Image 1 (cartoon, rainbow, N blue to C red):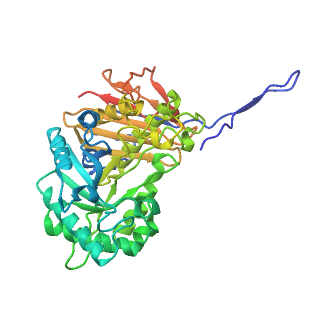
Image 2 (cartoon, rainbow, N blue to C red):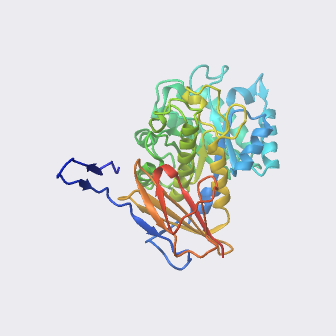
Image 3 (cartoon, one colour):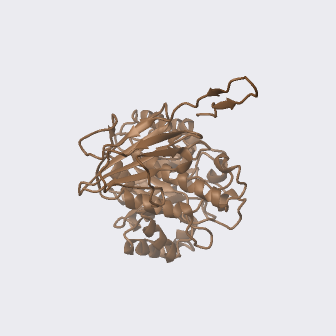
Length: 434
């Protein structure tokens, strides 16, 4: 972090003025050419796939206006609960509500990630299924669900935050979750050999829990397609790169290395330290900061090439400006678009139709450059600084006259050749037409 190290002390009379200069911000020069690399970029062969597999959590599955908003931003799927107690009731199976959701999603070209869980008053009241009888009942629920949606754009996740007592409904137990996971994966693959199924997302990146559950694959069972995590953090989004590296190293030891899925992650506009000074999640300043972190959160996961990433969530769960759980949404509780909505939509639009992608990260000066080569030959950049007080100077004097620069909302930026890009500005978008 670059602190304020510049200090000028003016003394009266004959005493001299002593000046200690701040370290100069790094100068980054863009070429605007496909064949000229400004930096030693790293190719990102999975960028387009990661971007295309970006979804959002919703709770109100009957609200088609919400689904329209999901599509409008650029998401490709929604994540929601497929409650065991809802679909198996009264001695029969009742998927009608979710059938309608899947149909509504299909009309919009969207898919679903269904969470399989939780308690069931008949089979496993007030606790997760752990006994043989309970697991047998849960197995049938998973089998019926996977069979029901075998022809639809539907994927599954086994439970949610099973490493936390509130969601596991008991003291977390890696061994008991392993039995549940094995039961569910077997049932899903028997119902639909082509099914895509993942572990439930653990809080943050709970590597200890993941290790304790271990690899359930064997000669007769293909394990889950992905290991899901919820990398919420007080730190800036770019701090997750190191965590993903450690997780992938761990998963590389599995019989068949699973993908990394991020099934929840976002930054609320209240309750986290990056917005603590505002004290009001509805303030313009807090929501502007949320938008900046949201854009960077998406960019980080796309650069990291995660198999799937899900934003939490589409709409605020309430109207309180001082309740953290009411301040995660891209829409407010009354369906008004928030700055994070507009910034996310612009990001999806700007990064569309990229034929190739590469990036450079300067971990000493804390900035990132993403370079995209469009299918039509357009050259695009997203450049940003991270870490409070950091910044860079962007030299665009070599770019052709048709080059444009905008902020993260699409507002045009002007410069006489060098643009200051402090962290507080957020990502800058540069486009050079073919």
